[in-house]
Length: 235
Image (cartoon, rainbow, N blue to C red; front, side, top):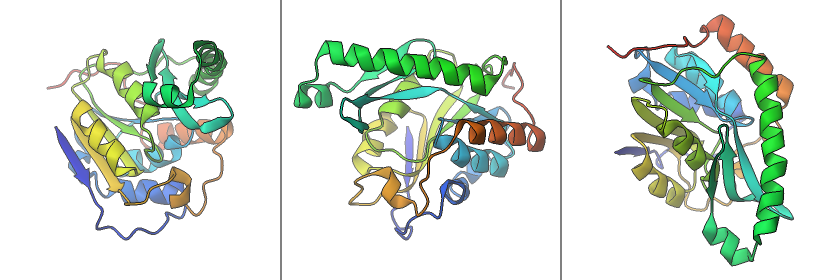
């Protein structure tokens, strides 16, 4: 397993997610023009970052739908996450510490499952998910706080036979990155500030990414880079 941290990088906020993607791409030069690389953005916030990464690596862009399960009344605090195909990961430490009941978990899960299905239909517009077997997958989000969404993404993909799984983020909590690096083949985190607090504080512009933004970026990537091929056999 490999992990790359770049804490020597000046710890100033990124201008926006596009800027963060450009910075992140500069730490992923190992994957430029490598056969079989597929960049997967985690909607919504991870897609603008992933678009810049895919463009710099000359690699196709797709998405992996993951929904955070927010704590009731504290939606930004994750108690777990779900992904397409029924995969789920729960953070039992958070659930136990806050005394969250199973009924509350189920209510949140049902709500987020409906939203995940809606986005899947909208973003893919009838297209099937890209074949990932045999590929080097670079999973991109706009940051890692608890890592719940990224963990469920990794678990959802591991069973589909990728050659490698790489997690790449512009900024993350060091403890989360340390925990996650043992679960993937490579982990690249451009910035790991000592006092992390929240992903949004490391962006000057952390405005919400819309569904239209996602569709536009996927269409741009298809025109500029090319759509992912549905089948890939590693040489």
